[in-house]
Length: 172
Image (cartoon, rainbow, N blue to C red; front, side, top):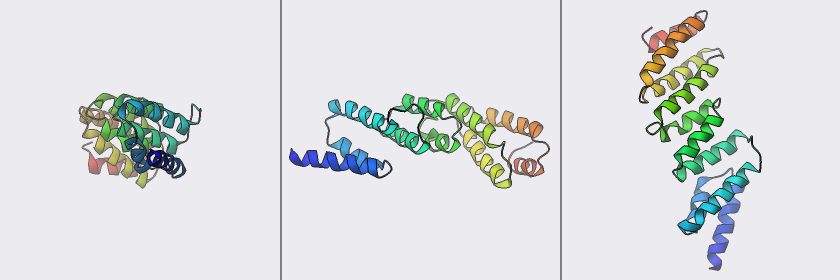
């Protein structure tokens, strides 16, 4: 009907003008039959990409949100792998994948956390501990975190604040 067209138009307009708010995505999705939706979804993702291979983090996040909404776990994992240095992205979406892809999620975290701790400062070290504790909750995570902490102890032995924070949180 005419109303459906208006709803689609408005929902899409609001989705693209408002930093990709998923509420509008869901409204738009609900106006299409399932057999038509796949094409529309793919068009939306392409429109977010804007024909570019490398896109801004907030656009990557929008596409990740779509993959979560559509339960496209493999596509979500692939996108996170392409953005493996963006720790906050990995952290935000790991929850959706940790049961199906524990090894991959741990590897993503490991790469990103190793990069993250190259920076210095107590706030960095405390944040790193938070990530490491999340990693421990993933299947197989305890062993990997153990190795990482041992490695940090060797590589960053000259950082007393880091050593102190690691000692407080992990058995060194």
